[in-house]
Length: 287
Image 1 (cartoon, one colour):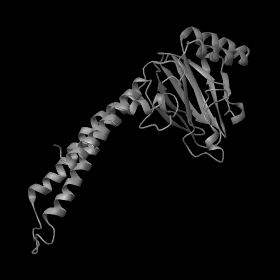
Image 2 (cartoon, one colour; image 1 turned 90 degrees about the vertical axis):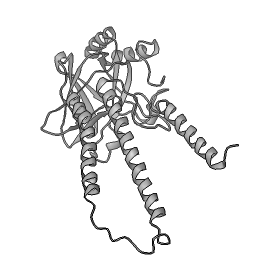
Image 3 (spheres, helix red, strand yellow; image 1 turned 45 degrees about the vertical axis):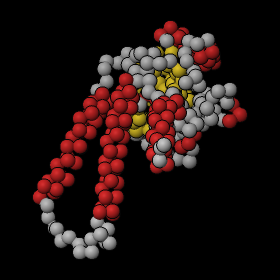
Image 4 (tube, rainbow, N blue to C red; image 1 turned 60 degrees about the vertical axis):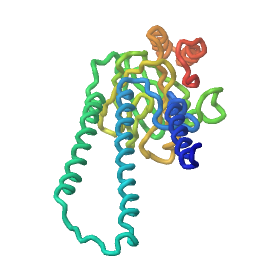
């Protein structure tokens, strides 16, 4: 017969395993999800790498935390006043001092190697298939396509009464922009007034938009759908009303959208909605 303590331990172990196995189910793709645990699901190679690095560091800090907790409990039990009425006068231990200096250095080296690899991937983009320019201002985004005669799409947040079924509050915009799937997209980021920050979590991109300066990031989305982001820099009273939305579509739909966006923006919006409705792109609501 199991002792009560053993049952409790087994229960917590089973709960931890269940949470670990379902963590991805609580994480959204393209937008936050209710009761989300951890990062949004990744749709780019760089964010895949960031996910692995996040898990790797989480394991290390968990082990360190448990080790320190064990030492504290051991000291409280082993060196309690009732068990040690005469305290030790030890003031120096060479091996211990070397160990608590060298071991943390080795841990930092182990963390640094994948960290540098991730930084290199983030800031060393492959040759671009498409370049877009994102301009932040109080309080909206302009997305410019330099290769298409500076075609400019202005994105404004939809108000609650404008939302359509399935659109997320505080994230949906009036004009969604499109990029092709499985293509390297270089993003030049700047601002016109104050500092903003361009962020789309599922792409794993985040970069400051600074007036008078051109920053750069990149992504390669491997899954079709709509991906939402927001300004991540406190830029003023309407900071929370500055979302951005990018829809990843197949090459054919992207070319049709470009032509429509140049001539009749309303038709371009309808085309992207139709792509979602007909399965030409997977809605983020279907996780």
